[in-house]
Image (cartoon, rainbow, N blue to C red; front, side, top):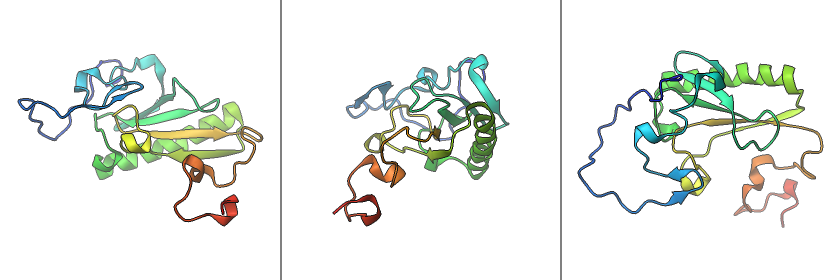
Length: 163
């Protein structure tokens, strides 16, 4: 991975002989990109903040807040749910390491940590990744509910002022 321009190969067999279903265009490309086209797989080594044998972390190119980091498995996998148990552990180990690095460098007061799986959930780069987003006092007017504010609840959340 790091600097090689290619992801570790996915275990799953793909049938490239069939015409793919119409793909939705996302802000950063097509959902069905070939492995060699993944922007995370082409990440320059200099961009890597920390890494272990199975995962690496880097600053988000389009940060929500100062210090926003993405953690990815080194193997190209579209969905977080397709990671091996070892990859899940490897990526989550980096979450704590990244948090410690961000604490010392940016001094946030809180964090949002999350994963978007699929276009309907907001995934725009189809290589599994974890967002580590530092939060700062006053960065939003009312942070109550955190990620619950992505969309209106189907059952009102009284603690968030929904009716």
